[in-house]
Length: 275
Image (tube, rainbow, N blue to C red; front, side, top):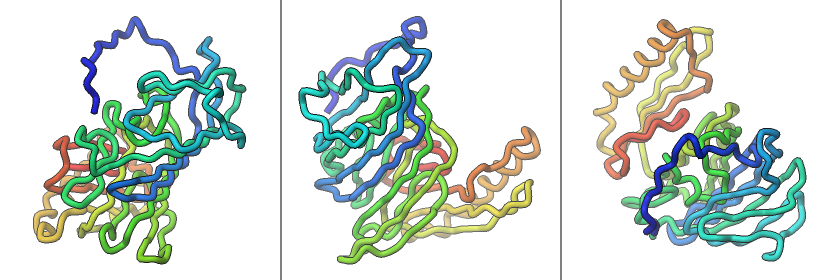
């Protein structure tokens, strides 16, 4: 649990990130007592930074493995000071692979990945993503995300994340998976994950460019009759953005999750709003 006093950050003290992240591939083996997170990032040195080391933030994580460009790093190759993991002497382009373990059922901060009433949720704004994996968790680092979720199907039949669903199936032993891809760059605080027992109202909606998008409002069983207003509001919002600003939904679907256990009231994650 975080116990330090929050520090005010001033714009005059801003320094650019030492490395930029192009792509992030996340794999989750979801278990309330022991969730394994595999993180594979492609990174490149930021020409606007004079710093020559990678800095990653992490909170309440057990570091299992750290590899850079296929090479396993030992403790002498990096240092961890508080919530900051630093890798010195890094090359211009890096593929970083990180495996960590977190315990969502003990995450009482409700930042990052946590469980509530038998379901998994995330809250990453403003600095919650660092409680999921080591990452340059700051809003000026934007990347494309691919996410693989694995979990017990009877307990978590619905597996959601940002972007478009590109694959789903069975794993055996009562487990299943869903793979999500967001082809547009976003900051880490807009990442989202939901694994729960939910039902949905869905509609196909014709966008201004002629594409059909899938709109879904996910709720707990017994609340499906309360979703009409949310669905109509979503359609009105999409149409208003098109007509007023010339902006179209860039994804193939847009999802709203409305549950009684979400801690923030509202979180407008990319393509997966949680209320």
